[in-house]
Length: 297
Length: 263
Image (cartoon, rainbow over all chains, first blue to last red; front, side, top):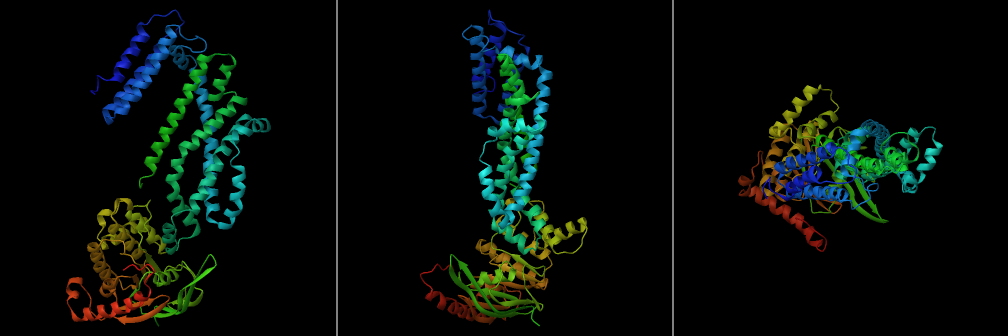
């Protein structure tokens, strides 16, 4: 298929046509934000496709445009309830209308996320490193960890929010416990199950214990730790937004919750889209971090 | 005084309440600068002997003295090259060697360490690979870096645990000749474990033939260095020695049939 004439580009043009020329009796905001999104998606697709020439790029772009086109025409032709399924124009217009509140929400959520995940990963890795290395400590701690770690943090979130002095501390705590236990446990498993050849060759080189932990085992396990981060972050994000539904005064989860209370589903859907964007950006950044930090794999 | 003195050394494995005597009262002494090959079939205890010398395992009985001092664990006077390529995969070839230099305990500046490392890499003819990671190097190249790292530790004694066992024959011969030259130049005392009779003849001042748990014979090799495989192969000295070793090696092996024997 050529670069210009393919399913994705045809779907793109149909979408533009639908936005500009399909008449409707329903209430529609300025299409400027929605058009920007469609054009952005098209540019992204073209750049990707010209670079890699992968058919999947066409398919993904086509599915996206197909979905948007159906949404747009269903709304404009009056097939759906305008309150429950708002126009895409309106949903994306929220990003202009509510940009301050959204930005504040992103910042507040990311700050909590950074604290919770940061503390949990650092402590989980370091404590896991020691615990994994010292058999007696490991044998005592692993059974205890096995009892605590499977409890889903969402279950005790309401309690933590009620008990902690501020909401911030509560949500950091919840994120921390969602991330700490799996990090700690996998770290123990990685250390105790480490390639004995590496340990042996370090031992015969007379490596001291701190050096063994921080200059041999830590760098060896680093790719696994970073590789596990996207999953960890997703879990943390889940807990954070869960906590925000309960008692926050700002944040991504709060944004959705606040407008749900007023049945303002245009804003609710915009909030959900925003979360998707934030999670995707985090994922991409972590992958970049991984490839820039781990050169040896 | 000998460099390494092994006295009455025994080592017993205990696995699932099963006892296995891997070494039974071994006595062996090795002179400074001597190249000793320990030859024997799989399971004869030759690698166990080296593991105890490395300090990774503690003997159940007897002792090892190095320069008159008892071995209690790994030490700076010994460097080890394993059969498996034991380089640190997250470090470049140069940084692997620098790790060895740091472990030698000598104080160098960063620039000195780099220069020294490049010198060691040059001595194993790998200066162009300094910035490469182990995963980017062939097995033979990795093993040469491992040798450079072992040299960089500036230990008097090199313990080699079938270092060329996993390398293809043509390259193995190059590495053998090269390592023989290097260790003699640097005056290292070498204990080299192998199950390859030709390798032992090519490298050793003395060949220690092991049978399960014990030393069966100690055979001096008087062929002058440098020994080249092609030149050796036709000589009478070589043929006699080879014959002798084969009979020592195989008498035992023949009795062991049924067990897995890798030659």
